[in-house]
Amino acid sequence: MSNPILGRVEKDARSGYAGFGGRGRSVPQPAPAQQSYGQLGAPTYPQPTYPQAQPAPAQRGVTLDDVMVRTGVLFAIMLVVAAGAWALAPTFGLLIWGAGLVGTLAIGFAIAFMRGVNVPLIIAYAVFEGLFVGAISRSYATVFDGYATADPVPLHQSIVVQAVLGTLCVFAAMLMLYKTGLVKVTAKFRSVVSMMLVGYLLFALVNLVFALVTNTPFGIGGTGIIGIGISVFAIGLAAVTLMLDFDDIETAIATGAPVKYSWLLGMGLLVTLVWLYLEILRLLGRLRSSD
Image (cartoon, rainbow, N blue to C red):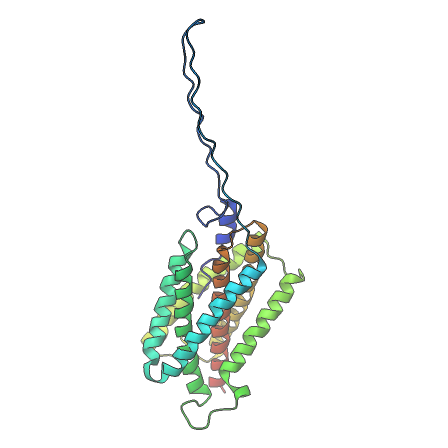
């Protein structure tokens, strides 16, 4: 699950956010053709005049508050849907899981190649993300927390709670490293991470097919040292992807992106944080299975 908006912000900024409701590029109007009226002494006629084009009204650029509010809305939608999926998972778990997975992949790829900002589609993505997260979290809780029994583990030992806390800690650490400048997002850093993301996305799709065909819970590597290494690598990759998200937000604010663009930036954070949570959940599951 890689971020579908990575690499878009700089490209859109160079185009002036044309097509996103921003300022865009102004297209110069051709000057009216001059007419010839013959030799000296020939009658002259006044040139036609044209109304001057009025400049487009200035639009307020996106701010950090805009991004935080939209991100909060998307997370709230995802959590509400995830809670419903959690409750229905014992009966319709596989159906909810499949719908959430297919929906997030399809909408994510659509948004990645779409011009402009389609807010209803981004909200729909948060809904399908909630279905997927709720169903898969319940499956982990059933296997590792004893939710299928009458005596589940204490809350602080829950694999889901530990994955959430781990996600928050990694997010805070990456934000601190980015804001203090200890890690800088350069063009080379961005290109290397982007290539690694494409490679891991292809691996994740192959691993999903392998897990479904072979009925292996964690896919390639299983619960052995190779599988644990894969999970650690994926968590690290998701963590550095957060820095790209932070840099995208700063770039959009600095280049005067339209307010509507904050929905796309909020979705970027949602995608990366959910991916990070799922990878931590998989690592904890592998570690507990290998005990």
